[in-house]
Length: 545
Image (spheres, rainbow, N blue to C red):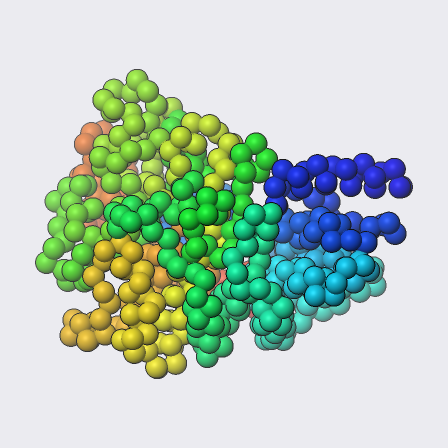
């Protein structure tokens, strides 16, 4: 046993030397010779950080109405309402989150054994408590009532019933506040790069308070982050590219120029990599994320008005759709004439494979195929498209932008939103890209609802960041998940034969996916996984399942 543990420790130590969070960790570390010093505590804590979401955060976008996955993948089935309690994803999310919670509980039951200053131990423990709260928050968002597990369970304790959702939320918010009180406000750098701090705890408190309609708590927590004075929206000095630049390697925390990202899953070349760029613009297959007409239509025109009332909007052809729009649109969705990595060299469809000219619908292995006629360029590092699984881009789990959106939404939900509230939140997001300000008086004059416009802003700013599905559920807008997923007008195709088999609606827009359903209240929560319920009937089951 000691020999095995010694080998494991050497592996962890050598991995840790490559950089923070570069550890492929075991589920737990238990040994009488461990937990003695700060170095060992940090190694154990790194196993907890392994539970932060990576590319699977972006995959959650497939469950909403912003993008369409090309095959009947499990997340697409969830978004379409065509799944049962035995779907593998339903169980894997449950198991994965509780595995992470177990790692945190192992740490929290052992960290006080170390012979180091109590202040240091408490700070490290606070980081583990934040991660545990983050995982519990994800579970509550999916399943509602869940077991509130705060210790390493023995076999008899595995078969308890679920705790009420509100009790778990109380625990989450309290844990995050207590942890915030123990953590430093400064952004961690150097060997502590990516470690959670006060802002991370408070930002998560704001998120989960908002998710659970505790708007006063959400607004205060968001304002507490804002008042720390350490975060700012990322900019490279150019409104035409600052937003998109954040989601490239230029925005990696290691570069030291990003004061916006509060929590990230750090990735490092040759150590921790993924294939997100390639999956978005894969040159020989279907894109895994095809933007929908619903998302494209959500972007305002540059005059601050929706496309259905703005005199600036026209759509005589494909290129028209991208003109006179919120600048975040072309920094999120690929516009003709933009650089991309989705076309193979030698394809006669493009004289310059590095420049996007038109959508591709026929799967001939010579370019990226879209189901809707649109492509994302957000989160794409073009050189990484050709490298397969060697994309080392950071995944942004919590940004200061979300904090600002939470502040505005929480204020509005309490009926206390002022123009100043918008100016210190949403209008900062618009300033970054040179977009017209949101003005309450103008919204009223144009018959626009303030709540709807704040929700639109959240959808636009956080597109393809894994938030949309959860927003739809908490806003009780499940009907959106029952609508057909549509794309561009069929008549815009440069070669009509490539879309000849596409079904359209009465206005000529491609129907990329039909047959979706949403049953309320059933689909507002995931079911308790079949295998978990079978093992422990005391868990009960959610309504309709």
